[in-house]
Amino acid sequence: MNPVNNVNLAVQFFFQIGVILLCCRLVGIVAKRFGQPQVVAEMITGVLLGPSLFGLLMPELQKSVFPWDSKQLTRDTQSYLFPASQLGLALYMFVVGLEFRVDIVQRHFRTSLAVSLAGMIAPFVLGAGLGWYFFHYTSLFPENTKLTEAMLFLGASMCITAFPMLARIIHFKGLAGTLMGTVAIGAGAIDDAMAWCLLALVLASFDSNMSQAIWSIGGGVLFVSTAIFLIRPVFQRLERWFIEEDNTLSDVGLVVGLAAMAFGAWFTDKIHLHAVFGAFVIGACLPRGVMTRDIIARVQPLAVALLLPLFFTYSGLNTKIGLLNSPYLWGMCGLVMIAAIAGKFGACWLAARCCGLPQRESLGIGTLMNARGLMELIIINIGLQRGVISESLFAILVIMAVVTTLMASPLFDMLVGKRGEIVRPTT
Image (cartoon, rainbow, N blue to C red; front, side, top):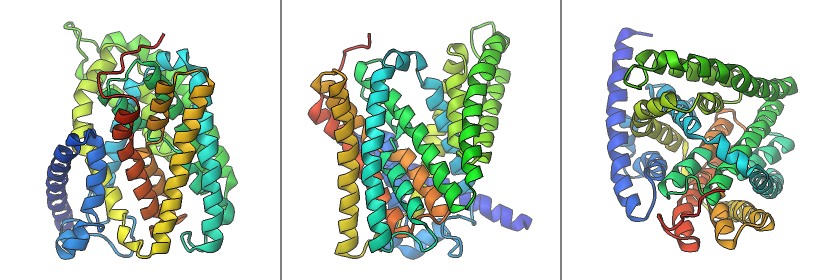
């Protein structure tokens, strides 16, 4: 590439960062008044900065700030926004993995598994049914998408839970270590792992290469096993070499941890499971103590405040709500919303009650599991980039992701209680 073009890209990218960060904080101020965490505000900001609002009101200015290659609608080829957004996403999931409490989930594994299965099966069946209907009676799927791919993809989109968003909401609500928070985080982790397997099947079918699905799922199992039985013990033995005399993590320890995250993200991206999976697993396998404490303290501010908003903006640039330009399409959007909420909230609430949990905890778990957020955006971005879904269906699914995530905090306050009122610990 021409050096002059590289300079222009850098100038454009720095300006984009400034616009994104300021807008995210302004929306965050408003969102906080409605009890929403900052990460939800960033998700909304991404849509607002895209063609749905900014591009609608000031199209020329929006194009100058966020230039888009019309020949490659899902790739920003005129700035560094795409690779930077992927780095932010991987770092964020790495931090979520570092904070993940495997020991707490193990105490309530059966309940978490029951809630997870209910929250997978019900919305998947409803989503697959909608996929069948959309395939036969609408143009929401491209012509090269097969019926089985349409049903599997929409089913997977419906049953996803915003695991990283869920972790942030649990922290924001002061639910870490409670029965409710523990069951929800465990069920969310299982849900997302299964959803990624479904996505691997869809993409393999779309490429007419089922061996790719076997490689993706088998490679994922191999990666997790290696991380648990090899990488984790190695880090446990080496951790003491990374600790300074003042009981802080050395720069070498930080670099080694980040390098492990990068290699994990590279491997899972290579086997088509997406980089976020590898980053999370490596984070979850690092030894708890000084290493995880200091990596979180040093990486989280950069990942959350600077890089993660770039991913939300990148997703927003793909979202064109204006494509839903008829009552019929908005009706289809309504069907997706009803199926998503009924399948996820209803099934998870019922499963929690059947496991003997009190009504209050069951309602809270159903509410938390219903949020799609970040993970939904990742999956549908992949679907759009690979041509599995149309831009109109992408817009519908973005609306579903935003609405179900926005519902989580106020609905939780209404049904369960506000922050600080949930004090029941796990046992």
